[in-house]
Length: 229
Image (cartoon, rainbow, N blue to C red; front, side, top):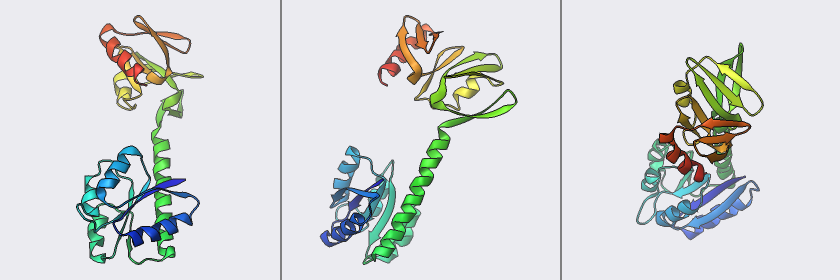
């Protein structure tokens, strides 16, 4: 199920889009905005997958609004002026609907958006894994399965939920391959998955059946990050 937002100052244009969106069971309309300022407030409150964005709007054009977005949903521009198409595609717009457009043309644009959303989801799932070589095998390990990593010179022991892998790699190098918001080096020899910590006690953390040492300089940061999970 994908979510979308209409941003258009013309009531009739919003009516057409609302009707078309209502024909699709797997596309949910979150809200309708009359200008870019309403849209900014809406996007701050709720994330959406797709924007139907008019280009010619009072105050701030759709082009300027798209440029202002730091994290952008997929964008399908809608306008009565085809001369803006080139500028729209330069902003990596997914499609460009010239008013008035048919339901068939709308559906083609939405199907393109669904395909892209599926690609992004797949890419996200792939990026949640790390490829490791151990025991003459190649493993694709999900980050969530990793409890902690123990460094031993040029080798590391990766403690998973159900096994342990010995990998010819340094602790420093694997730190660079893991999401820093989930993993923290709490000791010169230990890197821990913050979401796998059961509790912190003194200068140790409990992860599964293991007690792992915490270097005193790292303890305050660890407590802050653990408390923020």
